[in-house]
Amino acid sequence: MRNVLITGGAGFIGSNFVRYLLDVDPHIRVVNLDLLTYAGNLENLTDLPDADRHTFVKGDICDRPLVDRLLRDYQVDTIVHFAAETHVDRSILGPEQFVRTNVFGTFTLLEAARGFWIDGKPQTMSGVRFHHISTDEVYGSLEPGDAPFCETTPYAPNSPYAASKAASDHLVRAYAHTYGLPITITSCSNNYGPYQFPEKLIPLVILNALEGKPLPVYGDGLQIRDWLYVEDHCEAIWRVLKSGKIGENYNIGGDTQPTNLEVIDTLCSILDERLRDSEHVPHIDLVQHIPDRQGHDRRYAMDISKIREQLGWQPKEKLDSGLRKTIDWYLDHPEWVATARQQGDYQRWMGQNYTNRKDIQ
Ligand code: NAD
Ligand code: DAU
Figure 1: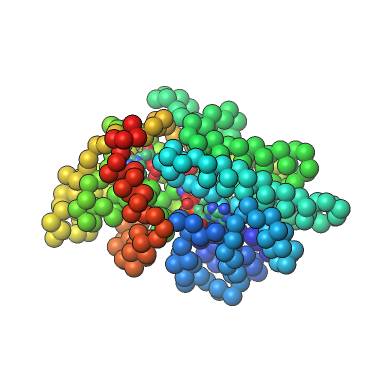
Figure 2: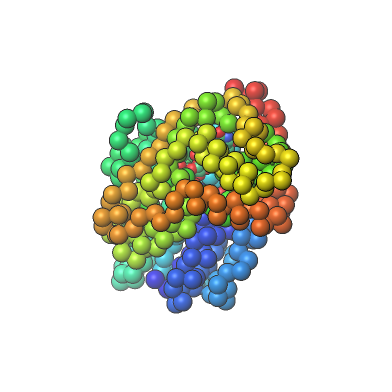
């Protein structure tokens, strides 16, 4: 692994991974292809270690000539594919962009990789890799008492987002089976940590609480997610790139599965401690139950025994310490928060999803 194309590397997890990769291996060069949609932010890429080994390219993964040129010009041997539309609520209100980016974008990358690595020159196949970042949401929703998702759990995606990710996984798998493309897939649970765009639950709650705004809880708030600190995710991907078996899928999770209300309660308690003089203490009083997400998955939980036993990875961060680090990061980065909120259509989105929420039920 020398020349790595990262897609979506200006987003939340992608930018954390770019930073991790440059730090962990001094020989790797990174080409970062990102369209800078509302979720991408060049501010996520400041202070990179050894930034000379990082090249940013603003562009679309659906642009085949561009992807071809990048693979050729940078002699790419590894693709780590993060780029996607990622917010479930947006996929409910506007699914088309999810199909374009997540399905057609992944298809375009696969075709380009096949063209560059396989067609006419199979000798170049050794040492190359297409690594695809997927999600636990492809497995659907668990009932209370169901065993956690494992790698052989049948796919049953419930939202347009999850369905588009499932479709992209199937394409990746098919390119391995049909063309022999050397692939790995990791399916991950909910990430949190620095640089997460404040449309997702944890940064949204932190930032609303700071301003004394309502903390919006969909339905009864008893939905369960498996929360993973983003740096643990980055380390897991690295392990799979280094030691994972070609053709395999690995589940990654945080081994901690609180309800949404428990997460919000913990966030509020930490904020109460950190901001003793705030007029909004106790922050938990800001919780407001609002109409539920359409088709809302009730529970996710990941069985991570495969990656633990085969690659020796397990999450290091506990939920409480990870949430403390996350809150401190948002408190320490008001400029980043201001830029993210000014970006794209954030205000319009907040109006559409929250102010007008009863209209979509
Ligand atoms: P994000 O929304 O923060 O960032 C997505 C990035 O992709 C942005 O920088 C955006 O500009 C870029 N992008 C979007 N469309 C593009 C296109 N057509 N061409 C090039 N770039 C484009 O996403 P994230 O939360 O960092 O998620 C990254 C990946 O991890 C996604 O594939 C997502 O499905 C997966 N995942 C996320 C989580 C999570 O909790 N955030 C959990 C499991 C899996
Ligand atoms: O499970 C992995 C997935 O996690 C990723 O594949 C997705 O890209 C990522 O967005 C995330 O999806 P979720 O829908 O689980 O994340 P979100 O932060 O949007 O919501 C977490 C939970 O909180 C979910 O049950 C919905 C609820 N929620 C969310 C928001 C934004 C609320 O109750 N209120 C809110 O305002």
